[in-house]
Image 1: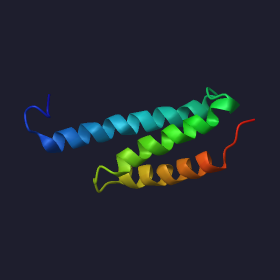
Image 2 (image 1 turned 180 degrees about the horizontal axis):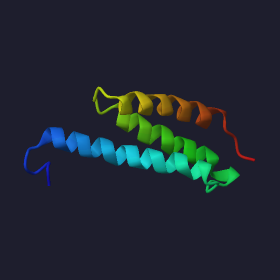
Image 3 (image 1 turned 90 degrees about the vertical axis):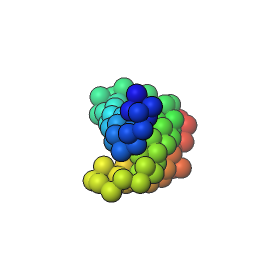
Length: 84
């Protein structure tokens, strides 16, 4: 709706919040033991993609720095992960 009204600043902020929630949920899945060993590689891929999108919004805030860090961690974990 904000996009249709031309409220670009609101759109970016809402998109950032959405991506933050997706990233938090993906990370919480590890803490809750919801990720099976054979799913870890795919979970790290998802984390790296969501975090990259969040960091790529061009916002200058703590969330971008946090997302950029998780983007790099996710890429490395995806690279070093292997199937059991």
